[in-house]
Length: 515
Image (cartoon, rainbow, N blue to C red; front, side):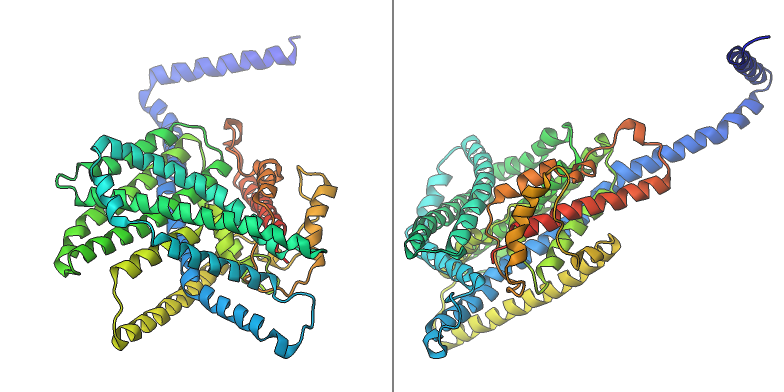
């Protein structure tokens, strides 16, 4: 008697020999046997290509469009609602003796932050008058092409560093100005933070002005060589990112950075057009001269982002569904900030997610607009008032559309039940007592704070959570052994992953509360 293992081996060898003999005797039968298998493998290969590299470009483009409108909403807030909120806060401050001091605080924390923002904008605007744009333009234009190319790349890196460092400075200012203080002497600590914030916004605005000036020189060059080199810099970005190992959390950070960079470039193009139209006395014919170059810059950025994300997802075996999860995460931030008990304003959520700080960009745009457009006469002031009301209407319309789309994305991702649940007391990867200590201030304070209250806790509390939380299981590239799992298990994995990412989002909002 042969053992069962030896019998199985003999049976397998016999089956292979019969299969080989059938192929040699009848090629048609062999083709009929292997044809369906080959077709099935081809279909799987094409489906995998569409799921990774093929459909990721379109999904990334949809995420970019949604993120750009989010940045636009935060940017319009500075021009439309922030002046009104500053006016209401100052009105409350000056009329407070008429009503009597009912509580310990003169102003709500959100109103204090609004006044600080308004004062920073006004001070930096007047400081920008001492910067000569014409001298800067001719100084940059006198440099060689290669030197300008290097300068522009250095400015892009410096802009990212300034954005990361500046958010911490503003957070420290908001927290120092709104934290409860036992002694009056403790209020002096707001002064150095305020001066640091003013200096940061001023320096960052100058940095963006140099970027806009370099781009303006590239537009006005005769042979367009500098503009061509700057556009080719986008394709160099593909080389630096496509062949690297990316996980899902890194891809999310890169997507947010691309959204912020593209929106900033749109504002820079607007500044370049305003400066050129001023030099040509607002001749409409010159606008059509600038239009092809503007379209080329926008088209190159869009094409580079689509190709880059398509190849990154293809080489790292990341499906295109991850972009819908990224979009749902951004939408959840927006929906959470519109609740009555919201801990943060959405403009600050955008700043943390995408590294977009609207204050320096707003200061520069106000400076360029006021120097390019001269307002004289009653009719001109009436046009300015109508334009302001138009911006308010655009802000409200954009906010309504974004809120509706965000609710739709949150429902599709099955996150709506988390909007009404309290923040988790602990997250995996962190000891329970630490997370409880972090969430304790946000649970004990008054939940009826304004929707536009600003976050104040330092940003360093957020980064370890994103690194060590259980959502890293979702934000990692799947191994090769997990490719052949069934459809049901993959759906369960996506659902659990969304919940893990959501836990990080809720805890981030909990940690950034100001009240």
